[in-house]
Length: 134
Image (cartoon, rainbow, N blue to C red; front, side):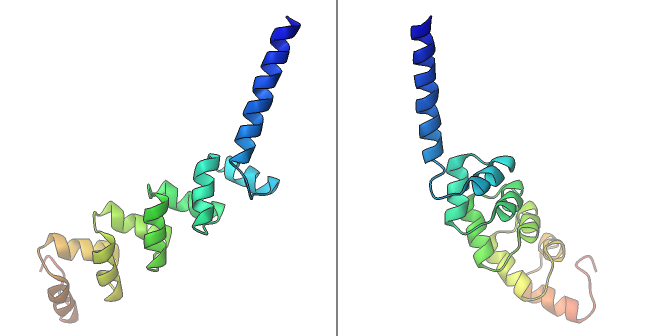
């Protein structure tokens, strides 16, 4: 029985050591914050490597963004909530950039696109006070 307890303790010690190494470079407070937010070590490291805080990573991951996608959208000036809306409306980043640069919200862009208008046509229509359904 004592032999089995020693083996079990060894396994737990080994597992504990291997899991803490995944958190390398983080303080106990950081580790705790990432864990409380529901992140595993590997994911937390990826978000941290891209300079996301725990709260930012939570916002982006709740919008179903991978670390790579979130980094791309963030680097183009989008906040998580805003980017999530563009993504929900199936508007890719490249298009979202153009529509946003012309002062269209995600929903406005979606309405114009769904009605069959190009960005230029939407701009012209909006300047005349038209809506995409007019």
